[in-house]
Length: 120
Image (cartoon, rainbow, N blue to C red; front, side, top):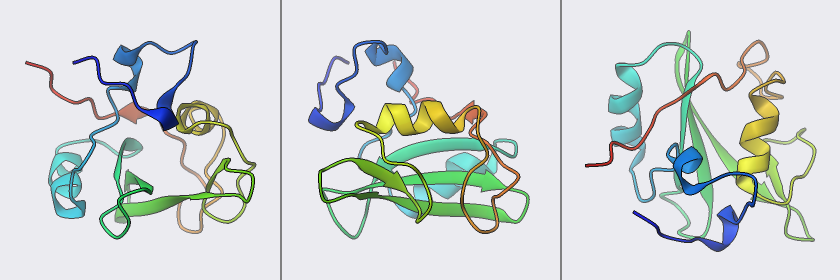
């Protein structure tokens, strides 16, 4: 599927590498997908509370964590409170594949295993 999305414009990444983006997946659906996955598996979905926001769902040793991407005043993306701002969500994700998450309860985790959308 070749859908374009303003927040995911990113030259270096082809649409294939955005297969961790699940669109309008609910929180409970995200958890049932992550149940089958190992720790540090993650996906990005639309926030249930606000259609224009996005959430990161992560499998941790304690279970599941859901973190909202917030936007700074200049429209850049921040994960949690202490993340540096990034221009696009793929850049946030890419950064945290090699850095530990700045999130209480997930300080030892990175984004290691994308849960891919199953394309038919």
